[in-house]
Image (cartoon, rainbow, N blue to C red):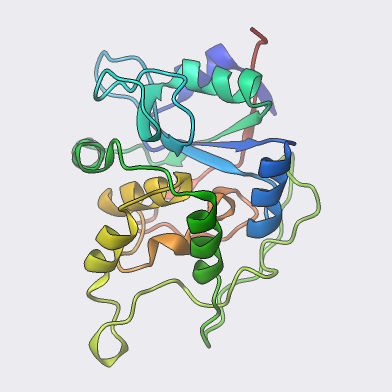
Length: 248
């Protein structure tokens, strides 16, 4: 299934995910490292009469951040249509939309705004930091996790989502092995942030992901349909819908 960018912008709601796949050397490196066919993820923010926005992190500063009114690197809130076009036409990416069901409620939207206020402007990590954090996020712990496969018209290039991605659930153990104390770890880790961490921390604030996981457990591949990322409260993410993006 594919739809036009205009149709996708009309359909998208707060909490919907946009995943991207490119063919550049850095894109392929991310895909290889995370063992998935996608290398970038952002989250839609659609509030009242504002235009749809994209909440994500990137190295560039090609667009105005809608929260600060400046151009900056790192964690940013962009006009969604403009952001998708930049990723397609400047960075050479294909894009897919995954819709959150049921839609985000008012409490979730308020949690999104609090997260934007807290994280907007957080720097993007250096290449060395990024590689190290991804590697640490894949250190296996002695607990089994998952095995799943991708089906349907989705961004599939033969990667297996269960291979080489670690066997733990990413939780930060507290006293007696309990997953508490995670907020301090997350705050330290998010002195810098990359795209998957931003989405994960925002989803956690919305009550869609369990608390206590290390931010570096998440990578773009956690958010494509070939992974079995389980949301809480009965929420689900739909399969990828390919978005046809016009050239500029």
